[in-house]
Length: 103
Ligand code: SF4
Image 1 (cartoon, rainbow, N blue to C red):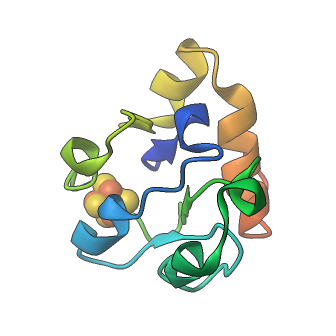
Image 2 (image 1 turned 180 degrees about the horizontal axis):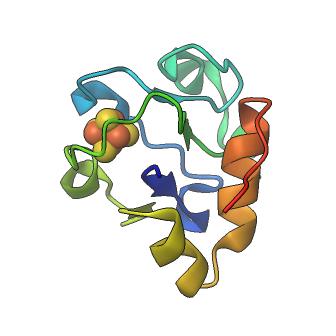
Image 3 (image 1 turned 30 degrees about the vertical axis):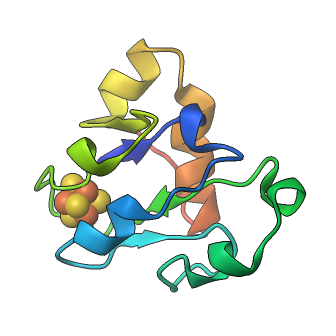
């Protein structure tokens, strides 16, 4: 079980969520262990199709990231994301960290 970043983050990659995560488990859009620092160096066109992701093995389900996201992209559970049509986001989130989503 993990919080999930859904499709509104794609091409947005606002890193406000990264700043508040107490366990530093939000990564990407490129560096799978970083804290999103590369976003500041990227142009809008370089961000197209890119997203931040939450490492499902590290997230402690604290909820601190939810109010920070300016595009309301974060779901409390994988099930909530899937129920809202975001199965691809769940699968891609796991894939980003070399993991496989297995409900
Ligand atoms: Fe980080 Fe908490 Fe959000 Fe999980 S729920 S990504 S631990 S801020």
